[in-house]
Length: 351
Image 1: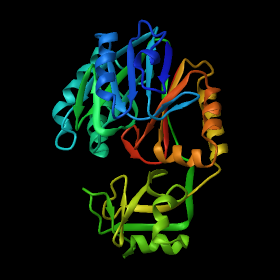
Image 2: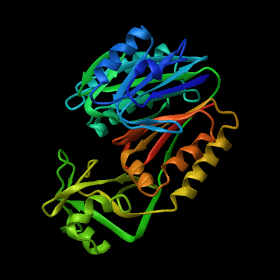
Image 3: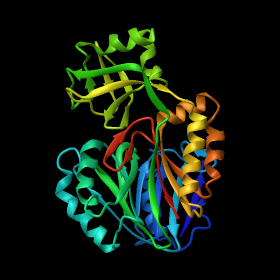
């Protein structure tokens, strides 16, 4: 198989797709002012080709912050694209679409991946999608776009998740998740006084979540929203940790970017040696895939900000380019199988 990536910093879709012929699956990443136009234009240029899209920045060795980017797979791919609607109410109502598409491509664990672009309510969406994927042990990577909008096959949808089921006819596929944080000391807590609908974490071990965070890190209230780049929370799930970013202070509580429930065990995390962690991830992919056709990744907006502020973003993209054809999306939340995480990188490698 082959992966194509094209971008236009000025939002010219025809510039972005220059050289793209005979695609079998297309991923569109656009900006808020041109999204509808780009979706329509893409469908006109490549009618009947499965596609999904969202609003968000994209990258290969460079980043397009307000332009448009296109990733396309060809030369040995079987693919289907569709959408689950009403994700804030009842996404399971549409699960038959995904089940049918898995059959259509003859999906199997070794050579098939599901990539999704979501408009919100991610945890519920992933639980729903996983009910179909787990029957065939299919992995998923994806992320949240901006503007509560996604596209599938030339149509715009609100309150929905667009997905692509991609089968690699040339070899295997594998999903990865990268975490650049580790637990800070012995700071573990039981969450309480949570508001699941608003992603509020009210108390930790019976004390104000805001005050606990400030006291441990010796910071002011005004520093909390940026301190999360270095010290997010993490929900402990066996040996795995799902990162929880802090969005803002809400009185004595903390509003987060993913749901926290009463009685969840959460730990305070701290930033590790991210340059070495990235190198380890790259080496792992190279070991698993001595021959690589493509890597598609989703990087969190907060990772993008952290790397940019530390002058590492361009170096990071250069490091990732050593894998060969690498491109991706800057998301507002990352998906890995049935997990909704923050401040992470998820990706899929194709043999």
